Image 1 (cartoon, rainbow, N blue to C red):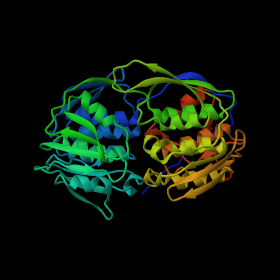
Image 2 (tube, rainbow, N blue to C red):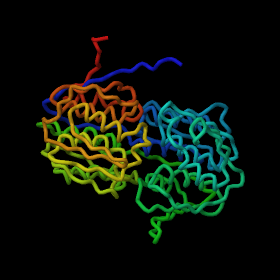
Image 3 (cartoon, rainbow, N blue to C red):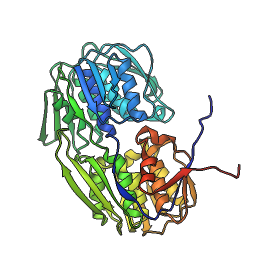
Length: 451
């Protein structure tokens, strides 16, 4: 197997970040728009779709399953779906690259269609657990044949006699919830998922827009989401909001780099995704929101962030589902705040693209930051702005959020911070470096002249 060429990047201390920017579409919403568009009958038109490696993998997957996906000259997409239960058996293996969202949602989408589908991914995705979706989807009658410990590559045998499910999520996971809901679309009767802790609800919102019968109610056991089976999804026209998880890096960098003032436009402010902004405000962040009228089904706002003197906080454990992807950048912000920031109840981070708890602890430590690691989180002991030494090369483990987080740290450290590879950034935010440079950041390629 050929060795993958690493492309290190380094971020230099920057004087200020300033500007007004628009960023790419929300990754979570983009995945779902492509999948549901492929399950509708007729043409679904999507503007603002994120063209990252992860979403492009989902587009390739639905094409293999029989949908037609065209990129129009204006950058919008047209998807001609095959209807619920209409997926074809693919002639080739579906490669989901680095995307856990893609594989888990797609497995749910094919689980109740009588076809055989083989899924694989890159080295990182092939090491990530699939048990959490296998258990509930087996209840429909779906068969799974994977590697030991239920790892990819995996063959999914969809059932032709699906059984509707009532399933209570053992862990808070929007991916698992969505996989079950998507499977329920082609099952008889009604399928219900119950979650004790709220997770991002983009699937539920989008299904309503596509005309699916869906009911959400609060029960003693938690929030019950019920989907009507044998759904007929109607095509629609939609614009994908900008991604709050990508905006998190720009906003956070503005807070920790002196003299900074930036505006990020049209950010999706779904309450199941805004945990980081709440936490930053509790730390003393100067954030302002200009709310924007729209017809996307998602609340939007222009977010204005200014350089701030921050203090450490203890992040409530129950907030984790609303900011699970933002803990790496929060750990960087915490290193530049005064006092300790405690982040517990986030063991889920150990089974992301990499073990993000371990990666953040190792990276921060190498930059001179004191950190305590726990099985379910970490505590960062910050000493305020200008306190982080930097002058380190951080291992990203091909994790886009680790790479972007430490590049942001380099902008506010005493000396440059280097990440061993920047190619993973393309999986979610391919224009990150260009946008940051336009705002005044100094980020560039790195050559190790000692070799």
